[in-house]
Image (cartoon, rainbow over the protein chains, first blue to last red):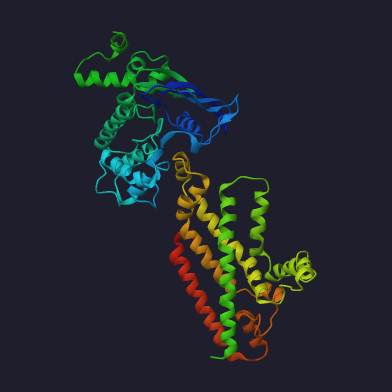
Length: 260
Length: 222
């Protein structure tokens, strides 16, 4: 599976113009709030319509402005996890996960749901409602629900926001497992540099509706293309921090160090 | 209790119940369109369904006569075809109550539907569910309290309908005199005891309706 996108969209004074691709890897869309990352996911999923561009998944064209193709969101094979991991508050954990399995017939649905519950360590919570479970558990349910469709790509909008660090690590581990097991492109939106650096196979840096740089995290970290990117990555501060912690006295030799 | 009081009470409930039965599904449909869709003339449609809330019910009754009376725009054809007119029957009371109470159903339900998290609707779409499925399984269940509150308010309003009913159904004893009309008749003809009994009964029923609307509707109507 490979996801190709090119999107141009003007919304209320904000202009988005981006183009990138994702293999069966974790692609992190990284940038400050309001840079157009979440809108990108909505445009890919078909929840908003671009002004121009395309969304292609391997051979399938899901959107193409020139050919006037616009597949409705219901027919696009994406698993989407919304900001705050939106769950249906009137359905139980089991009900939420089952709601993701629309295409599965009744008899195998129960089996699939049970497997997801096992896979995401949700045993014992089947009959609880979303307001009765913790933040980390909610993320796991949201992921399970999104994967029930056997999506051809995952779109995750800040799935780790507002989790404490222990649980963050757990969910990150889970995402890596998902990458291995499902072998699909995973697009992960965040403005948290630590999440980005520890999860990304590829980073796409968003600044103000445009792409500033694309590459492997270390590559970008070591060679930020512009001052804006460098500032965004807090590269200097991170290095200085490490220097200070390690007791090395020369933070002003930072640039020299970076080049080696 | 006097049999005429019992008749009026029964008729009132019968009329209000049918009006609510009519208003609930229609109200949900209109509220859904107004809350979820964008189309030309949406503002006008919204205003049209709100109008009876601010119009004197007598004026609503007047329009009903213009539309459904023996010589009315629609009523004329019905009368020519069947020799029957809805005017001065208890069905007319149902129609009058329906139109006067309908805005309460639409307004309350619309507010409840608008309060449903848009992300949940989007989430349902990305999971492959059609708009119809999403409306039935996500939007309406989450707007349930508002819909129930709307129905109870509609019922209470329909129960108390006076002006439009008087115009369109008339005040015919033993046929179309619902409780509000009966109270009016008793008062103007000096039968104060009967008027008192009915007024107190009615106040109680309305208070209970409001209490129930608050209890089941929760924040939807406050």
